[in-house]
Image (cartoon, rainbow, N blue to C red):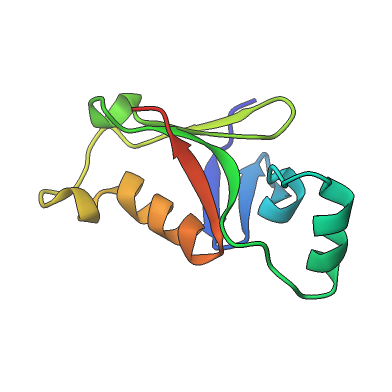
Amino acid sequence: MPAEEVVAYPDRLELKTGGRTTTIRFAEIARWPRPGWFWKSLSALGWRQPSLPVGDRDWFHPPRDRFFRFYTDPPLVIYMPDTEPAGTYSETCFALLRQLIESGGYYTFDLG
């Protein structure tokens, strides 16, 4: 069932569907460098590996076809709204979500 609402934070996504909220923490879906157990252990102690990938993104399309695909199982895909405010790329929902994810020390791989 599609989510009714997606709320993004620097460290997680919250999906709201049918009155229920599902939290997806970026640290849990990030692709850690090898050996993963070592880096996860350091992270649990407060150390942060700079810029961990949490998904892919494709921006080179009209707004309704732009998406983020996160490394969940199964993959979670979030499409952008059909309409965007008039202005520059940096003011689009796509750019703002990308900046928010990066502010938490994560990134998405650019497919475009």
